[in-house]
Figure (tube, rainbow, N blue to C red):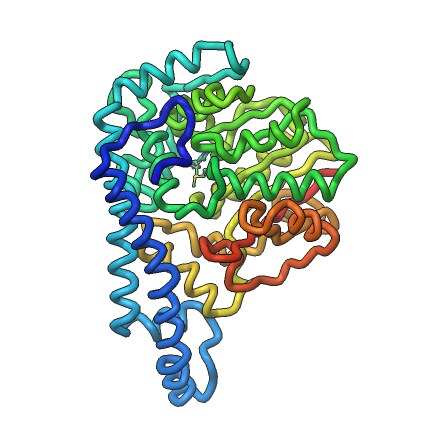
Length: 399
Ligand SMILES: C[S@@+](CC[C@H](N)C(=O)[O-])C[C@H]1O[C@@H](n2cnc3c(N)ncnc32)[C@H](O)[C@@H]1O
């Protein structure tokens, strides 16, 4: 089940562990497809009519739907199973990582020091103040979060994230689990064929699967990834070296990077902003604008904003904010991306948003076709791990 982890930091799992990972992945699929379908049916056939009867109107917002549904047995069953399965995702991969903790640190060290296959760099900063959104909670119930270290040169949180994501994603993120950035960067390169970035920065890069596709798209460019987690940047760099991709990783806070003014052409992030409080997002957008050269672009893959979705789809996505240790998920989705870009100093006329089809699901042709139309309205598959997944992207150009 961790076959997506096909580089030199691969953990060897026993057959029992692998069987468990398959079970957990299958369980997730059952919950997100069958049980989620049952939840919707109970809403449509029972809860919504009862609400209409009482209030003489349909529910208008996601919180109204949440309130109306949360005492239903099907909601409790769905939520309990989903929470437990989320914990099981991590538990299914942790034993192998713990067993190999020293060996993984050693392998990462060798890869990080070698320049045989690639010439990237990695730098950690033991003095970096870890922001509270990372240090104070195990985001999405992942034990140890993104930053904890147990041994010198530890990479185990990177290994837990990488292997856990493989179980979690149920094969929907492509062979290297980089489908989002493969799709988004392909779309972007096709949509702006004359734009040739020289320096690209990925914020909150974790293990680098959102950074490396940019090097494929723009081989001439220098690609950088930053993250506050030291184990993650060590892992990201070792992974890149193992794949033979040159990229540079540093342990830095995206709110205050220390990079020079106007030093990048693209500032990108993937699945990052919804884990940051609103004040932090505002700082990050300002920092991005400072870092961009004139004519450069800030670009984010994210969960779609609530205003783009129906109240039910908004409720469905907001579930994580209440039950999956993702406290910033809903506040982020309640924000207006266009307004936030404006607050950071980007011109409204330079704002854009797109919905990009998943390349591993629909193929590159669908991405090429999507370039010719700028459909941005939501549907129930935008941002979800579901059949027919599509990715929401927004950003702004700096003049
Ligand atoms: C969900 S992960 C996204 C990872 C990756 N971009 C991907 O596509 O899978 C969010 C990452 O943001 C990092 N992070 C959170 N706050 C940060 C900050 N202020 N500066 C830099 N990284 C941060 C976390 O450590 C974590 O690795």
